Image 1 (cartoon, helix red, strand yellow):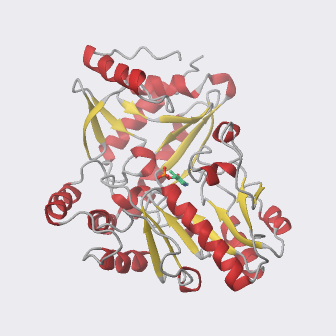
Image 2 (tube, rainbow, N blue to C red; image 1 turned 90 degrees about the horizontal axis):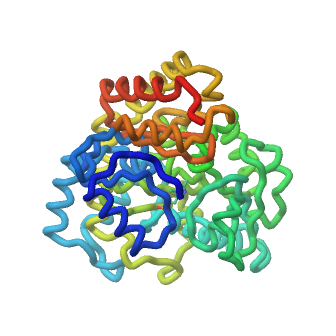
Length: 412
Ligand SMILES: *Cc1c(COP(=O)(O)O)cnc(C)c1O
């Protein structure tokens, strides 16, 4: 693949060569080899500093190596790290209580990756469909959206509309229907007596920070409740203060039956995900129905408890809201229309959509990297900007200045 001319040291080249020679080539990273991080900043192997405006796809809302996370890691890992669910541990119970309080929901189920939590929600919706809604055996349908991203397992890519995510990975699991995103009428028409759930992202992150029309989520929720369909909301990327509220669905008058969380739930230290929701659904599982060896382990739970406390103590929802307003308004004011078609987002989950004549998004992210700002293109003409929510106003102003200079001219 053609790559940018970032000045690379011998050490940087060495690390990239190790990846190229011994790794599967399932990613195309910018040629930056990171070795250290603190809050919104990261440093490469040669000590060059970059502002992180990707935040590991919003898994680092709390910032890199938060001192309270580090303290919890050291403390808890010196005590006990893994028990399995064959026994209780003294972190899982408090984590369940604190997470369900945060979500104002009845019960939670811990997993590890986001994709696993999505799988769990699908299993739960189907079980509810058979046991409660009385859908005929093996007939349950789940409706999903066009351009969705819910993870990479074979079941999940089976209902992706992205041909690359699916290509050569079939055969796939049946029982999914795709409707256009942002169109509540399309959902209404797609529902049948066998529909058990509607799975949706409040903002489609991987699709390029696609923000649906105002009122969409509330309308979908209403349609679901009228038709006895579970409203399943994937907030793995949008949740935990990223969009300026604790959860993005809180912008609207709606309530998911199942809320799916991951990414920042582990504060960037440890993978932990969860399905949180009503007793009516989560209460259906019996011992042996579902599980995970590492799910709910005491190290993950201790870290996640601290990660949630940081969100509250540092008021990160309000911070994301205010800084996001500032970020978008400054860009709208200062970016030329010949280059930038649209600036969109909520809180600190934002994107710049380029005019097709401006050149590929990757050229812009490479120019930003040269200046010490890391952001990644999501689609050919879209660049996402999602810094850690702890970013200082000074760092954000500096970022705005870099972005304004890079986006002031086409980069063909
Ligand atoms: C990242 C993401 C996932 C998958 O999470 P993994 O931890 O990578 O499995 C699912 N849904 C959304 C909306 C995501 O952004």
